[in-house]
Amino acid sequence: MSKLTHLDADGAARMVDVGGKPETRRVAIASGRITMSGEALDAIRAGDVPKGDVLGAARIAGIMAAKRTGELIPMCHPLALDAVTLDFAFEEGAIHTTATASLTGKTGVEMEAMVAVSTALLTIYDMAKAIDKAMVIGEVCLIEKKGGKSGHWKAPGAR
Image 1 (cartoon, one colour):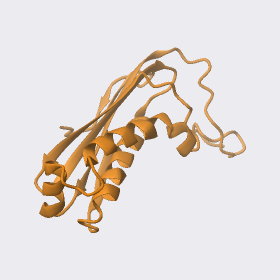
Image 2: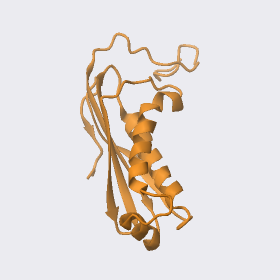
Image 3: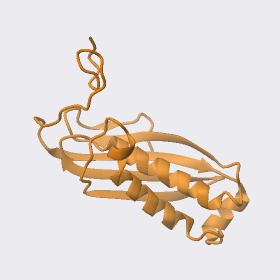
Image 4: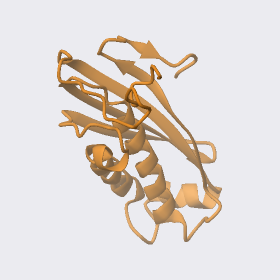
């Protein structure tokens, strides 16, 4: 019926069988940003947000979320990640977030990296919403992936 990997011959949803695939080193990098008022940005930078260390909490939340991606996204395999890192950069009116997920395995970690970024950004929003309810989360995307059958891919114009 279809060449879509997550549909069987009858069109029913299925989890892809990765049992016969070789294990390779897999790395995925995703990013996103949250725009906010200068007041919220200054408070986060100064560590002066009433709920506490915003970026510390966002880092932990992103790592925890990456580890649970298989429970959140229906067709994702549960993965034993080797590492997840989150980095934050202050920009004019925004915080840019980058997550890197890696493992040696039979399937990629793109979703884990994107879930980590999304959750970190949502945590920033949650912790700073008392200062700025109009924050906007956006631009969550895959920047780069390495490993597996499709090899190395990098987003055009990726920083």
